[in-house]
Image 1: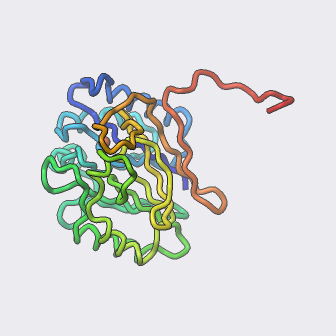
Image 2: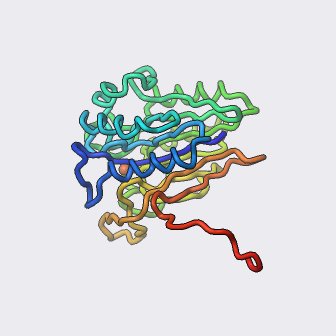
Length: 267
Ligand SMILES: [Fe+2]
């Protein structure tokens, strides 16, 4: 198993800027890097907030930007997305009952269950996983062979991080999700939404949150602080099954200026 995670590309219509950066340029850089160095990956998984305004023009731009990718790409919903215009532009994305974009990605050693935590209340950025979506998750966990690793991907993390502005819009249905996960705890959960690279453990489950591709949320734990964004280079995550573990390797897009051999004496 070897796949790439990207997240929170936040494309805007007409290739405009967002917070002083062009999301389409940032994404183009990611596509070039993946094509140049990671063509052996099985696919790219984008974990939501594909666009900033959830409009059709931005999804069309996204389609155009992803077209040069040499490997397949799978797209998940985030709180900035909108299902109807997304469906018009990407009609082949699998849907479950209720029109939610949830699907399974199968590799030789793992099943990746991709969830859709977009809230049905327009403009409400809190994540939701209703009974329909969780019932699907329960059935797919049950269908996952014990010998295969289980990865669950969702846009919204189900836990607080101590970053007040993001904790306020985390997944609301953490406890119902936790109940479903009792059938089998995932080997790994991956998320977007927070726009910061974070790794840790939630109730025993290893978790990875991927850095946002356009703008980043400042590392700010002061509860009185307003939400602040900062400019950092975007990352891709290369998620690999290596011998007896799954590991997440992050790599900056545009951060490398040269490569060189180690010092032969003191490497
Ligand atoms: Fe986002």
